[in-house]
Length: 299
Image (cartoon, rainbow, N blue to C red; front, top):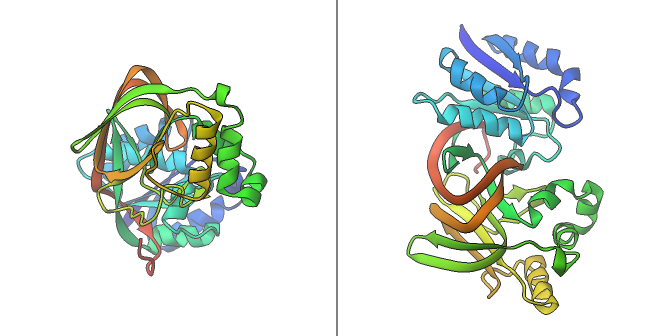
């Protein structure tokens, strides 16, 4: 009999997985799996569990928010033999689940996790850590997760900008040297995002057009510090109209990028705090893990 390890975060989203737990496990058993269940106990527990136990299993299924998936992928990236991962999204934002076009219905998502097709997905390496869909610093990294969802629905991408740029005086900037391929950028930046996702912070298409999750490159956005309210307005206008590559906004694709800062910069990885770093080397690990997606979807 095939063996399945089910790792879930009982606190993700509104903790709604508790009401469907028996149904999910029953579906796994009816799919001819011998099931082991592990509710995560603390931050980092999913990573440690995968690293310690996944060799014994044929399929890993995780349920929670994107942070839970991030931990599972991080654990898998530390292993030589990588097992396929099923994902039942139960978080409040579910950015990467949206990019993977996973079903929003819990039981349909469980069916996809069990019976879908394997999709070889890129994974980001951030120094010695891993991330599945975004590494970011600066003004909008907290705003994207704190902005009221009703406001997001009403204003869309505008809410993201307006909430984060209420005052020029409140905007922190980081003096950095950014290197990718044969290009060097230097200056004060208020925001940087290295992503492999269609949706970030609940906003779709924020990373630009033609985003592929398995092409070996990231989508990068960098925003320079505005010197005056006019430049701030120019930045907001460019973001709202999705104009790339202005004098204040850089937008490009690359498989490897290095950030070197004068002082340590706080980063977020997949929406969670990723520590402070004076230097960050970010690499795309091309098609490093397999995630189960719907049979008919093309990513």
